[in-house]
Image (cartoon, rainbow, N blue to C red):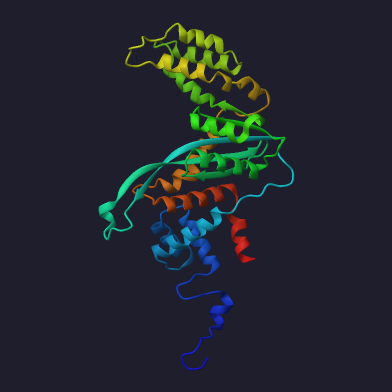
Amino acid sequence: MKRRGRLLRPFSARHGLSHRGASLRLQRALVDFGAEESFERAAARVQEHYGVKVSVWRVRSATYEHARKCGACSKKAGPEKAATLITQMDGSMIPTVKTSARALDKRTTREVSWREARLCLAREKDSRSPVYGVTLGGPQVAGENWREVALSAGLGEQTWVHGVGDGAPWIVEQFDRQFGPQGEYLLDFYHVSEYLAAAAPPQTRGASWLKRQQAYLRKNRLAPTLQSLGRRLENAGAKEQPVRAAHRYLTQRRQRLDYAGALDQGLPIGSGEVESGHRHVIQKRLKLAGAWWKESNAEAMLSLRASRATGLWESYWQSLRN
């Protein structure tokens, strides 16, 4: 349009294309593969399945761009609130790297470390579709995220919240802070069993002793277990004290051992659901061999994978088309 004036590109305008750009369909393919595999492998799969050759940089930039947008979405709870919510929280370590922004050669300032990604989930008692949330933030941030996830899953003023997990003090503290009198936190039965297994008598009857203690705990009979442990406490100066550790662990957390009540209501007594979430939400993508993450990129990828696990993938792309 006139010499050296504005260019009119009807085809590009009609199909939403720009220089070095990508159609929405191609962007979705890039992010879909980039969210599951290394960016190099994702680029190869795009070419294999779609016949489009793209650079690793293109896959990386598209994945992070949409990860930050998709991760900001939340699953809105319906008007009906849940009568009972099941919720869990646990941490998983991921590899991270920091470099100095002022260094010309960032390899000289490269510092690697491990950060805890705190994953939580919540679902209605009879649902099999949990809402996931994950953050690299500290306990307080994780607790606030936990409540937001519970609200998305249907938390209301009259909702009873059943929490289950290990006895990490920060998790128990955040559960009490976020859900207070309308919930109860139960120690993971299998985590407790690990303490008991370590404290079992060394004789061949150790397996039967463990099963007997587990049966006591399922019936809320803690006293026989504490008596059995109390008779075999190691000397205070012993190098290894598994019996003392189990006795102390149960004594300090006796108010978190209502397994009989949970079983009577059909509620889980183990935290296998969030532990499984570590594998398919976090570790499958963020613990690839040789992969180290900048914290900002790790946060984006964690949010993306939590959103996909929650079921927000299709609705996110639909929102972009509208």
